[in-house]
Length: 293
Image 1 (cartoon, rainbow, N blue to C red):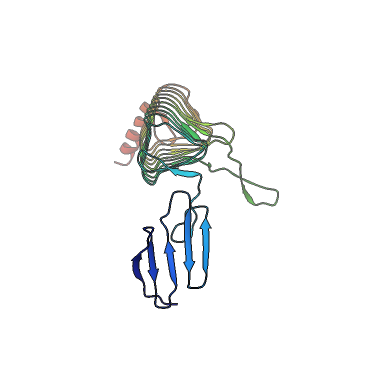
Image 2 (image 1 turned 90 degrees about the horizontal axis):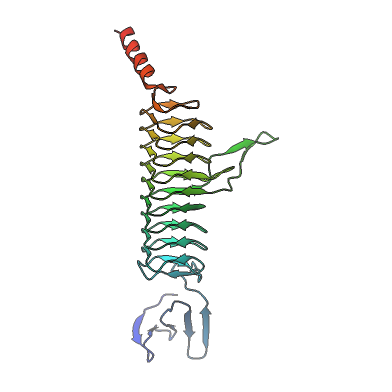
């Protein structure tokens, strides 16, 4: 049915719209808790009261989520959010999460259920945090994903590839910085850990069960496979690759593009594929150049 609508002001201040067939719809102001629609004709009145707000497309807004006063974001009523925290418009904090004092959460970020964020931590735009705890004074740059399932599968008795359960968490220490679009997977048999004061560049993949020590420096495009153990003060150059279940001692430095295929037990500098002490690798490169002259 086509309507020609004319706006009229009702006595109570709401807007009434009439058409030539004498049907009218009265739309009262929408509050945070309810919505009233009254359909009327000359003979009868039909009323419907909704217990929750609705979007224009018909989707229902969950009443358990509320608007945060500082920034305009959304938080669940069971989450604990310190009054000094900022949750920007478009960010969402889910049930049972804890957001400490002076935390900043940028637009588009999602803080999943039961996530803990320490004080003075900054969470950038479009970050996804699930199944994790974040320490104090951390910086999580735009697009980071922490706490999603790791890449673990096995073949069942029928020969089909099935998912291996990933039930554990990610634990990020204090004063850690994680670059844009880095992904850190949660553990399957032990928690994934990043130690205090470690710094991770953009586009780094940290697999499930990985444990990284304190004061480590991990450059862009590094790939760390599952269940790797890395000591303290380790530096990984750009695009370093580390195979699964490898242990790397403290104070090891790996040159860019090298690949670690076995344990490194002694501190020092390493490079090449497979990774070897840096002096040996340089001699191999020099000898190879002499061969092709």
